Length: 410
Image (cartoon, helix red, strand yellow):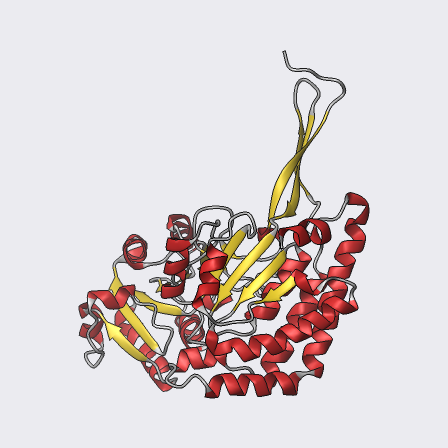
């Protein structure tokens, strides 16, 4: 696979324009194939869903494809195709006192190993981003989505052939055997980067067993903090979206923090809004003093990524207390503050260690498409290389080019 990445996806400078034009043409052709084969993909997906009984509502939602979701995959491929080519960009350039001119240039990482659960649409998103960023990719989906991933991969392979690229540039694991995952994790020298996308169990296994660098996030334990200076109508709208738009995604808000100054008047309205949408709650003592019918929260509830219509609720004393709660219980994914006070918002954003901080916006905007990346291969919450949504630029590394005029080192 490394040979493919070197020979096919890292062309010489004279072939760069032609190569990335081919990647764009492959993405567009694959998008057309997805639309043409919608019925086949839906049939494969229906078989996957039927073969996975006992899933939670959130995981069933992640697994299920619809005509609209297939069209969204196709549009994602087309959007990625239109993005500027990330490889070969000059990231920085400077001249030393001795006259040496140094340039930092973006280049592909190489071969990406993508291990994911439930969401078959990841097959298309990951393939498009890896191709456009000059990387080859090996995709290993969960056993529950094997048929769906295979049907989507057939469209991707059609796109590759239409653009004159080898099928092997995008590969899907032919088996759901867990041993295949182990082989990918031990494939140092063949795979350059592993990206896991799924539940805590999967990510933990990858981090513990990998002999290949890993780009990952463990959980999406996101918070929305409603500050004392929040506009009540805005707060209600943002929270309803942040929690209930799609409860099973990693950018969904899992904990509501309400400032004590506004909680007595606003919290009952927030609870009523979300209850009307089917949400349940786990609340601390201060929140239950305002809304006595809320179920009591255990300490562990504030460290739980619900991925469901359940919201943890706590009342806090200002920005500092909100930040302390997030530091104690969060996963450094995405946090939001709702306030009309710009100074309070900046204090909150500056105080976060999380990959993404938002002001007056739903946490569900933590998404590569919403960031203008076209799509994402995942969300990174670690401290190295990339953080937040991982798109084309984050799938590149760099090298240096040094230009001299005969300099020698004294």
